[in-house]
Image 1 (cartoon, rainbow, N blue to C red):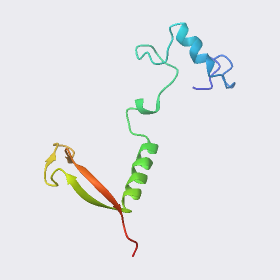
Image 2: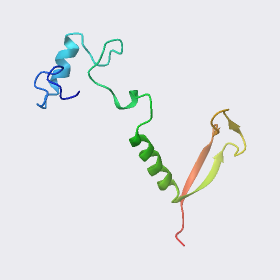
Image 3: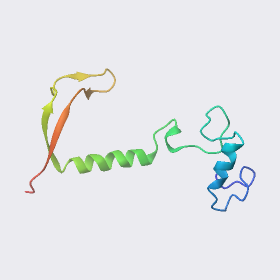
Image 4: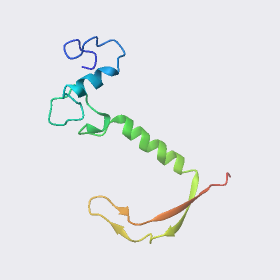
Length: 98
């Protein structure tokens, strides 16, 4: 789709100015009411595999730290479908290696 000659002039050519020309002609891809030729990364209805990988990477990084609660209460949980803490501030300390 992003390389379709039916949708783009010189589709294989790197030419970022093409978006400026479309915007001047009133065909901005930020206009959600038009049928756009570009699908943004976060506009997908299902989470992508890249989002899942990014969340796993953050979890792996956070395992290298110890948590100290500065503000909030660990038992104050809000939400019905998903449990999450509210108004919580934590301080991270690097874990000592065993």
